[in-house]
Length: 193
Image (cartoon, rainbow, N blue to C red):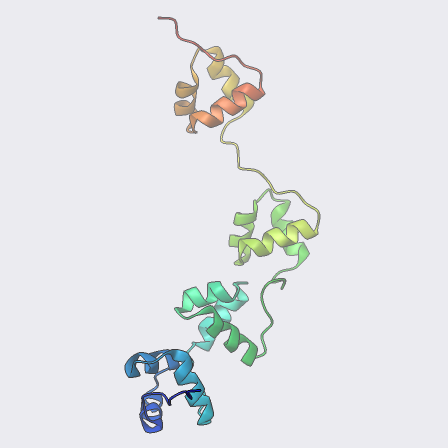
C-alpha cells in the first residue's frame, strides 16, 4: 500500500504566508493545493486560523436588525460559515426566533393598518420577524392596499368603459379591474363595431 505523500510545500512557506494575513483558501491558491490541505497542516503546526476580518460594529448593526447568518454574510462580503463562527465565538444566539420588538410595539403599527413590510420598516427589522410575531398573535396579514373603491369602479363601469380604460383611469392593472369587476358581478363592457 502506498502512503500519502506530504503536501508539496514546506512548513516555513505556510507560516510565512499565514503571517502575511492570508487565510487557508488564499494560501492554498498561492501554493497550488486545496484549502483543506492547508487547514490540516496549519492545525498540525498549532497555528490559529486567519478568519476574514469582521467589523464588530457593523456585525452588531446587522445582527440587531434581525438578519440571519447568510444575510449578515452577504452584507459583510464573507461566507455564512465565517459569520456563524464569529457569532458563536462572541456568544450571540442565532437570529432565527429572536424577538427584536415587543408585541405592543407591533400591535401599535398593526392596528394602524400597516402591512408586514411597512411595520418592518418602521421597527427597522426584517420582514420575517414581523410576520413571525403576527402569526404568533394569531393575526391575519393585511392584503395589498386597494387604490380605488368599489363605488369608483361601478361608476366607471356605468359610463361604459371597458376594463382597459378603467385600469388606465384607476392606475392599476387590467387584471385587478377584471378581478374586482367579476367580484361585483358586473358584466364586461363590449364595444359594438
